Length: 318
Image (cartoon, rainbow, N blue to C red):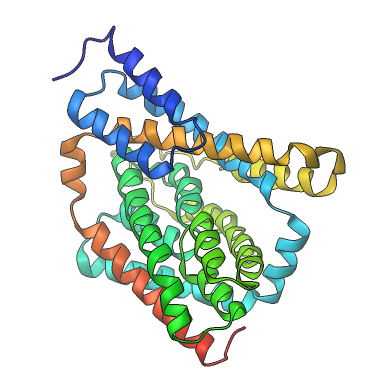
């Protein structure tokens, strides 16, 4: 049963305010938004979607404050070949599994991009380009969050049991774990210099979000009714915003002191964004997405994790 329209904004404001607290994880924000929508309904669904769109753009652009372009570009150049090959293989396998499982195209694309590059950040950057439905975005984030939690628990024990060096584990974590936060957690738990190597390589991989998002924006089909003008392809300006912010914080020393604050604002903005996205998802919409995206995500993640581990152990990359 929906709350009265006069009461609901208060509930939404209080719950959204909690998402800005530093100890609230993004998983909880997304789950809380979905729970609020399923249990209480959302009479402000359209407004929440609009705010989430703009907040997402700001948050993705502001994340650039945490990237040193010089280091990232150097790491990216060193691993350009295997990074491109790995991303292409993951996307190809995602497309194959989506066809095999008959998964919704939007959700499958988001899960595949998130697995191939850097989880939630890639999903967040790609969703506006696809003009993806909120339920597709929520499901893709849910898949990534579940697998991130699993990676934090199982990657370090697997690495130790196989005798991976910190360098090898850092490489594996950067290639096979979705989100940077989980890469940091797993590499920190492993010890040695795994963390330093993993983070730099992960940031280099993250730069692939932007050419990939541009390519998707150009090639992704825009369905339209007969007789209507074909929809214009929107330029994802948040990509340029991300690069501009990253360049500014890399090459303007005076901004260095503000980097942590901007990163914090970006992370909290992303948390609030996911809450708002979750609050627009109905139970019927989640049922329409179904179980297939989760199975797709698990199978694709296993392919990426096992494949990258095999080539690292074989000494083909490193």
